Length: 251
Image (cartoon, rainbow, N blue to C red; front, side, top):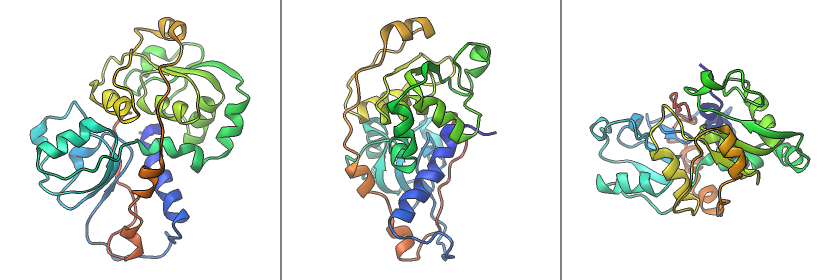
C-alpha cells in the first residue's frame, strides 16, 4: 500500500548517498545492519541498526522496543531522543525529519512553490483519508510520490493530519496547519514540532478552522547538522548494505 510519507525515506537516502559520491549500483557486503530514516519506525530497529531522522510511534508500547544498542546519528525530535536515552542509548541533539530535505532532492518544487496555483491543499493521514475523500482540494496520500509533492508545492496553504504533508510544506516555506488526527497518537507531531524549535502548536479541529487559523508558527530550520549526520560511512567502508528500511507508518 503506497503512502507518500513512507516513500520519502529511500529517495532522500539515495540522493544524499549519491551526493557523497557513493555508487549505489556497486554491490556491498552487508553486516545485517539496517538504516532507518523517515517515519515512525523506531520499534522495528534491532541491536546495531542505524538511526538517521527516524522517530518513535506513540501507538507502540515501550516493551515492543527490544533493542539495547543502536548507532544513532540523528532522530526526528527531542521526544524520541529522550525515549532512547531513558533506555541507556546515546542520542545526539541532532533533530529533524529527513523529509525536510525534499527541496534539495527535488529542486523543481521550489519553482512550483514560488508561483502557487492552489489556494488550499488538504493532506490527510492515510487512515483519515476516507473522511476527506470527496472534499475539494484533498490530496490522496496514496497518489504517486511526485504527484503528491507537486500538489503540496503548488499550494498557498497546506492543512491536514499527514505529518509529512506538514513537513514537506514547511520545508518549502509554505504555511501549514495540522488538523487533529482521528487515528494517530500525538507523539510524532510533538516530536516534529519540538525538533524544529517550537515548544507548542495548535491543531485545528477541522478544515474550516485550519484555513481560518492559517499556518502554524514557522519552523526554525538549520538542516546542516542533519545533513552532516548522514551515515555515508555505511557505504564508504563497505561494511553495511545500502538502503532504508521503511515499514508502513502512515505518516
